[in-house]
Image 1 (cartoon, rainbow, N blue to C red):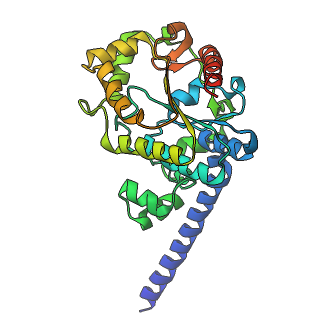
Image 2 (image 1 turned 120 degrees about the vertical axis):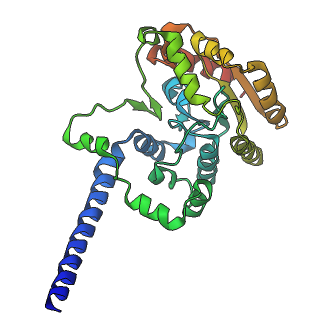
Image 3 (image 1 turned 45 degrees about the horizontal axis):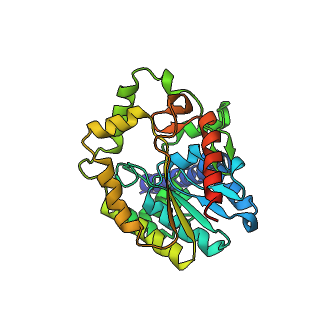
Length: 313
């Protein structure tokens, strides 16, 4: 009997110590490491920005994130995030408009991969998306139980070994300006450019021949309903692409004209819609990879977009 009591006592002490260490690690990660991640830094910039002067908001995935520098577009914030889906953009926009209705123009990507459901875990960063969604909304879209999401949120540091290097090693931070992420380099130095583009297409279109996922399309339509109800102008941008990327798309068997014709049959039913096409704007010297501009390309592109946005005001 004494041995059983001793075992229970030791087990309880061990569990208490484990829980304390676990909670301490979680608090340490959230207060010292999580805040250094790019999405959190951009979110902090958005919170601290002058919302009264914010008139143009860019949303979407890595294309606007790296290609649009608000330094060259007045009264703008770039609130895009890497691999963001239209479903995620809907929840983000809904939250933003509840808090700030001064925005006049909403800008979204309308790219060839925009509606391919290739992202295996779009809500892996639970802590970030809970800034824009309720726990019940997140449970609904992820198919996870609410209690599981609470636990996952509490255990946000698990599997984040690289993030801990930010504390113990000098990990270079990405330059961020009003949400824009500096993304430099030269695509021309990537080796076999056609092969690089081919691999990118194989990833983005891994569910081919499905190129327009119904859920993502419905999320876009919900965004357009939200914009219409709030009297917002909506601008869609076809972001610049390398000729190798376009060639890989065509070799995949995708009819680009048919794809955009199908999308336009939905979006052009709404008022105050504009579509800017920049897919063939640059040669390879302005790209850092097959579908993202480098710093030089981003500057020129942002100035061009700024000029074009002025024409619709």
